[in-house]
Length: 202
Image (cartoon, rainbow, N blue to C red):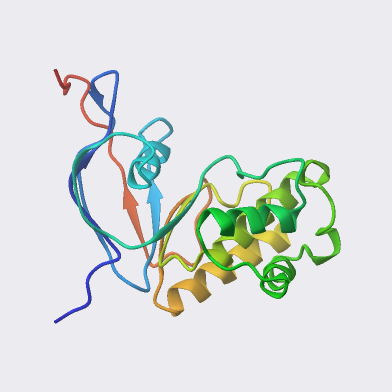
C-alpha cells in the first residue's frame, strides 16, 4: 500500500463574518513535499494554516494530519526567558526529553550559540525568529505549518531556513509554507482563490 499522506483535507473552507474566504480546498501533501501557499492579501492564507493547526474553526474534513509543528506571525517566545529556557519550556509542554546537549545543538544549528544566555526580550527580531526555528528542530514533527517564517531573517537566516526545509523534506517530512517571497525549496505551489462575495453561510 502507498504511504498515507502527511496532510489530506477535503472540501476544506474557512469563514469570516459568515462569508467563505476562499474556494473549498482539496489538498494532499505527501512526505517529501514542500508546498508554497499563495494568494492575494486577505484571501485567508494565515487563517487556513491556523485552522489546520486547530486554532480556527473550519468547514470540511481533515482526512489525515501527521504530528505537526506550527509557527505563526508571532514567535511564541517568553521575553523573560533565555533562548535555552524557552526551548526547554517548549519540550516540557510537548512531554519530550530536554537535555542540555540537545538544546545547545539546536541553538548552534540556528546560529544562536553565542546569545543563548540572553533573555529573548534582548534579542533582535531576527534572532527571536531563529529561536522559533530551533523549536522546529526539536519538535520531531513530520509536518511543518509555517506562516511567513522568513519574516525578520537576514540573508544568512533565509539560507538557513531554506536548508532546514530541504533537510526536513529529504528525511520524509513535509511543509506547508506561507510567504510573501518565493519559497526556494518549494516542490509545488497551491493558490487560494477568493470565494465570490455572495457565497455565505447561514
